[in-house]
Image 1 (tube, each protein chain N blue to C red):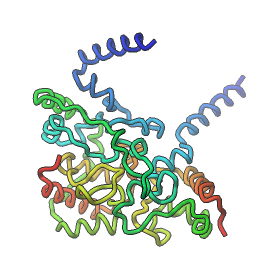
Image 2 (image 1 turned 120 degrees about the vertical axis):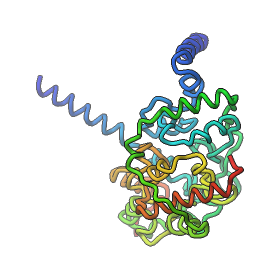
Image 3 (image 1 turned 90 degrees about the vertical axis):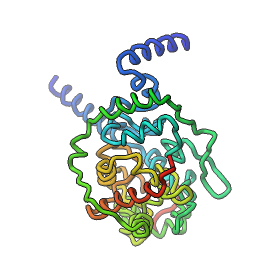
Length: 116
Length: 226
């Protein structure tokens, strides 16, 4: 009986966590699409007056030039952390590290590419 | 089935109208008037208007009274931009056909709703942490910081035809919002709305003050807007 209770508590704790974590697709839709576009090609609704065009996430050549660590850093700490544009803000207060890691994998899916 | 829902809704709105007036009746159909803030993106995507349960910490009463009588769009792409964009020739563009207008209230209703809204202050704690230093910033300096050094223009308009479209326009911000709210929200949007589309840019105190002064400068220039 105590084992069952522990399992139940564990399950409850896990489901709360699972609820709090968003899917990478939803996070992309919420925060990335405004600049990187609904198809990920860098043509979001915000780009009209930008001096630097957002990265095209479907560009396999450019995206394979960035390691997963670099992409993680850019999302978490913003463009300037990898010597890119200030227009890419830091999302570290919005997304957990785990969510950012999954978002990096989402980008890999969009570019259909790996680093190197 | 539809009829049952309608009757239930009618009963509900009748009860709430009696309790909380227009605010908890028709306003609550599109706004979160009771809190807590949205905790998941799924619900954030469905938002039709900004949360009002902390309106008393956020808005300027005189602006509320005037805007409610003559409401204009503040967020060019609606509450959640993703629900109001379509593919265009040059990329995503706003699909105006999906945007709806806010209803206009009579002067009497606007005045009483604004008075009710101003009583809603669950975040006095956050406001108390803010201290706005008196000061001004030359418009060009502020604009330089806003666009080049801080990157806020990615999502916000600083004049009707310049800036990003997913966030609320900012050339009217200081007319609409209390200064302490502006600084608190810039400092930590997630303290107000965990699922805010606005990132925490980790601005220094100096930059936060600068931005509040800049928004005040902008709003004075755009005295006739919204």
